[in-house]
Image (cartoon, rainbow, N blue to C red; front, top):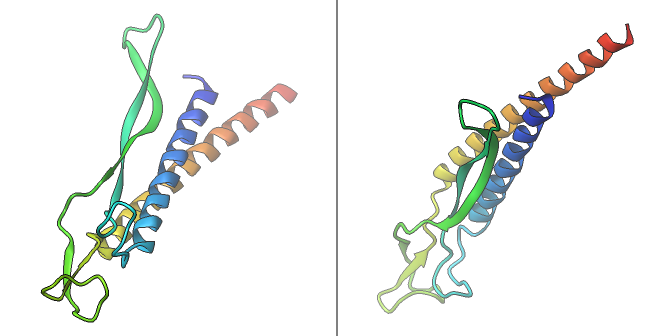
Length: 141
């Protein structure tokens, strides 16, 4: 594996985790949204990651890792939260309001996980950069 391949793999991880953090922040921002363009409350969105593979020429392994990509952004189909509030403008005839299916604890755990993954990719990127700098120093003599 070449040095720049590992940097490119780390870059795909950074991009994927940044998108995941964007989705989490969007979910948290819409935690009280009861009206959307599609109708009904906001639905929680989740990123689905997939491994990127590259066929290795002349290798016995056949494929080697090329990083991660976001395969899809899907909606969580868990049921809405029901809150009794007859004074709310979006309350149904029984007085219940359908709130988004977002649990703030789950979102914070996902955010911490995404942050740790982002930091791990930055660490790999910095290690690769340090190795490249040391290799250049060897060339100076």
